[in-house]
Image (tube, rainbow, N blue to C red; front, side):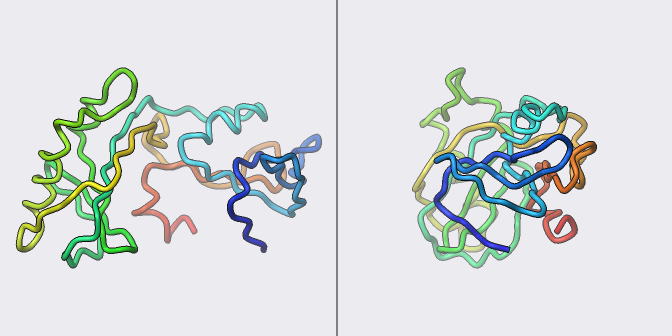
Length: 176
């Protein structure tokens, strides 16, 4: 295999009923024996272009990335009012269903609610460290319509595979 980074969006190239590779954002075609479409919330639209229906829920999400903090979290934490996971640089990615429900019509996070989210995260951590927001993101969550992961071969197109699930952190090892 070959890893290409910084090439922008790529789309599968299909000839009749077999994948040939991918077309990069600059138009370059990269030939491949197999292609996995694992583009998060973009999966349904991307496969839809190929006539493959993947149904998704409307499921907006908000995530706040913190600056590195003195915490020893090594796992995904799902508490009643907050969820969090560690980042490689020592920060956290924090989210909550109640905050998702408050996204504005424009898809942005109400700034006044971020301190409450960080306080909820601090409350479940040993020592209750002060958490500082570094970045705030909002967008669609990759959520299959029936909540079940969509993993495996794409029917009708040889050598094309899909990975579409909201459970990537928990199912990653099994799916891989």
